[in-house]
Length: 308
Image (tube, rainbow, N blue to C red; front, side, top):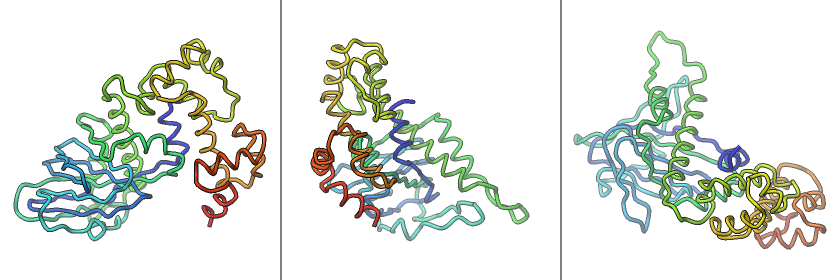
C-alpha cells in the first residue's frame, strides 16, 4: 500500500456531502472555522469564487474542487461581496436517505456546487495536512468519482418509491473517493524539484520507503534494510531521502513512531513502557521527554486529557 493510503487509513479519514446547492447570482455563503472538520467545495455547473482571510480569491469553474484542509473560515459565492448566508443555516438533514437540494440567491447566472466535509484523527494525518496548501484547487474533469457522485445526488425519491437503500453511506464513500482523487491529482501535478512529504509521495524510491515506514513503523528498520526493499543502496537511499524530504530517514521515522505511540495511548490500555519500547526507546523517561517535545505534554497527560 502507498504512503498516502496508509495515512488516510490510519487516521480514519471520512467524508460526507453536507450540501447540494444551486445558487443564482448574486449569492454568498459564509463557512465558519472548524479545526476538526476540513471543507471542500465542488462546482458542478457554472462558476464562483472562494476566499480565505488574508488570501487572494480563488475562482472555481465547473469540474473544479477547492479543499480547505485546516477548516479555516471562508466565503464562497458570486460575487463575494453579496450578502452572506451561513452554511449551517442552509444544511438540511437527509430525508429517507435523500440529500435534499437547496436553492438560494437572486435571478442571475446559476452555479451548482456541492459542499463536502471531512474529518480524521489530526495527529495521524499530520504529514498530509501540514503539506497541503491553505486552499488546494484541483480540476476533476473526467474523474469517474465526480460522475458517480453527481449521479448519486441526481437520484430523487418519488411519491411511490421506497427509500433508497444505503444512499447516505454511498454518498459518503463517493465523497471520500472525490477527495482522495483530488489529493492524488494535486500530488501528480506538483512541479518537479519540490521538497517535503508530498514530493516524497511522487518519488519512485522515497515513496516506497515512506509506504514501508508508515505501514510498519514498529519494525526495526535500518537504512540498509529499507534500501533493499525499495531497490537502492544504503547510501543512495539516504542521500535521496534527504534531497527529497529535507530531513534524514530516521528523523522522519522517529517522528512517525511518536505519532503512532500517541495513537496507542488513546486507543489501547497498554503501559507506557510497552509503547515506548515499540517506538524505539529503551526507557520510558527518554520516551516521555521526546513525546513532550513533539506533542507538548507527557504521555500520561496526553492519554488522560484526550480520552476525557
